[in-house]
Length: 495
Image 1 (cartoon, rainbow, N blue to C red):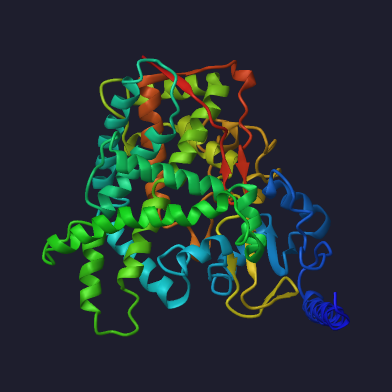
Image 2: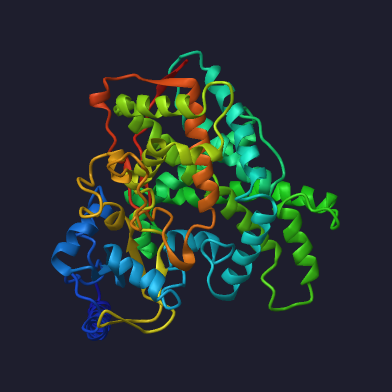
């Protein structure tokens, strides 16, 4: 190499080191005011501490040393972790305004670019979320009409289960189709057949994206976005999957536009178009075609994946504990009988079944870190200063697995939600849907679906595992953004 070339390379290296050192010292000054935490390494931050199969349990363990509020570094970026009920409640409820903004997730932000409802912020989030909640309520969410739709869909699901004729099958897509059809009735105004190829393809895409996001690849893409953008891997598939989802939704959007009758809206898409037309001259309006597309995908995805995964996890757990499954079935027979499907009015008379449903959600901690928050301004919290825009993770697993509230929290035990006299026991620590301003908008719908679908299945079928129940593994198959159950097959035996 020429001497000049060597000198140039050395100069660049020296300048780069000086720049990194300056940045690191600047951040060190900020860190002194932030909550304590493990010392980060240059560039990689606390990546070595996060190299784990169960991110949520690792974060719980770190709290034993650093307390209920501590700082980690995802690469060069600091994030604050909230551990335990008191810290989570204080931030999300008592200081709701300061902790209201949605935190950045590089893997997702790169794809959605702040559009839609779930990953937007500020005025866009306010306008779109308010509109979505109003529209969903107008189309029956939380009302008797949506209950009737769920019970009707439960009948479709039972027919599909009957058609398995006691042969082994993977329940993933049947449960996906059942839960998705409920939100589809609101968003698209239609019902899809369980053998519709386009519909099944979209179910596969949503399932794939949830698993990728919950894998180590997804975690690495959020910690080292610039580096991970350059290398191949499953995380690169998420962009292709999203484009396919957009194509699916765009077909529905275009068909709705052509047949729109403003005097008689049929569903969410129609209502959005009406609002879009009303505000076409308002430059501050967030009602645009791009936000319609992403909002529809948000509702479609959120209304499908989380509820179906909870049901799938629940069926796996009940196979491991057949005595619990049988007690639920006995209560169903006593309260509902066999001549009709269960309804929501039955739930109040079924404390054991209610406890089992709560325990499933508590035990699996489906979204263990919640969806990330951030702070709207420099925020004083428990004597520390959290700088504006810092990502905050409310560690929901630490609340759902609190040992004082739930004895033996790592064990599946419906008694966690039962009083000594057998009545149902409520708990403020039950927050699988998060809390505060960013609490899941579909909580009521999800709770209704979980009860009606699970009780309908157990009323009509017995679960038959393919292995000894003692050998069934109910630990997550993947664990990061979500806790994803092991893949499995089972048989269902008609009663």
